[in-house]
Structure formats: C-alpha cells, structure tokens
Image 1 (tube, rainbow, N blue to C red):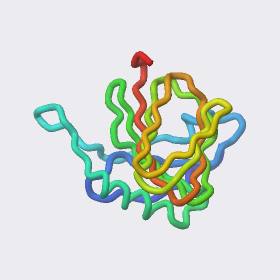
Image 2 (image 1 turned 60 degrees about the horizontal axis):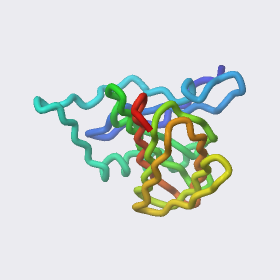
Image 3 (image 1 turned 45 degrees about the vertical axis):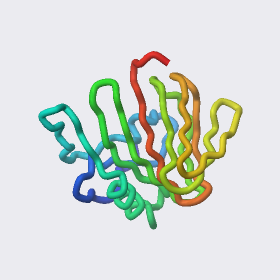
Image 4 (image 1 turned 30 degrees about the vertical axis):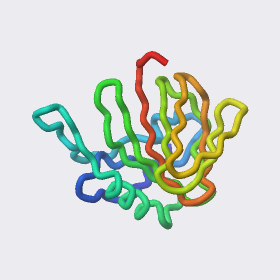
Length: 158
C-alpha cells in the first residue's frame, strides 16, 4: 500500500481535510479518500451547520496548486445519510469512474468539467448542477482548474 500524501492543512471554518492517495489495483476508491484527523464543525443548538463556500473554495484551490495528484478535497458534512465534499481539480485532472451507493449532486462552483455518466459525457459550467441516481457510474475530468461541490445522500430513495 502506498504512503499517504498529505494535501495540506485547513483554513478557519474548514471541515475535515481529505487525503488523496494514488490508486492501486487492489485498493478500492473509498480507501484512497479518507478524511484526515481534524476537528469538524459542530451543529449549533438548532441543529444547523453553516459554511462559507467562498472560504472553502479558497482553501482547496490553494492546496491543489502544485499538488502532484492535481486534486484535493475537503469533507464538509458527514452526518447520517448526508455527505458533502468540496473537490478542487487542476486543469486536466481526473476522478476515476466509480459507482457510489446513494444519489449524488455535482455542482460546479469554479471552472468547467466533463462528467461521464455511463456512456454519455456531459459538459458542466459554473453554476450547473447535475443530479445522478444511486448506482450511476460517473467520472470527472477538469477542463480548467475546477471546484466541485459534491453531495451524496446515502440510502435515500432515488
């Protein structure tokens, strides 16, 4: 198993920092993308957690520059059935095609990316939102430096 590559620290208000490691044939994707040990934001008394997406974008963009893997991510929410990640991809960086257990949304906050869903390729631009049903295989390739907000509803009806 290859050594973990640390992708940087976190800025004020960040959620968990996610470490990305190179893919090996014997290692599933879930093992390559684990939250690093860090403090997560706590819900307020009303049960809400609020993030500054602008601060999170600046954080991941700063860490992806010069990163050998050309990608980095921060886990914003990992609570019950909801998972939310902010992922930064440098130009031409890819996320391998993978099927995820749960419905997924992909929102482009910065940049432009091609998302492969099955055999179809969809070009997403800033402000676009793509909703995928559970089990849909998908892969991502950044056309420009790109920041994506990925939300997964695990076990939710499609």
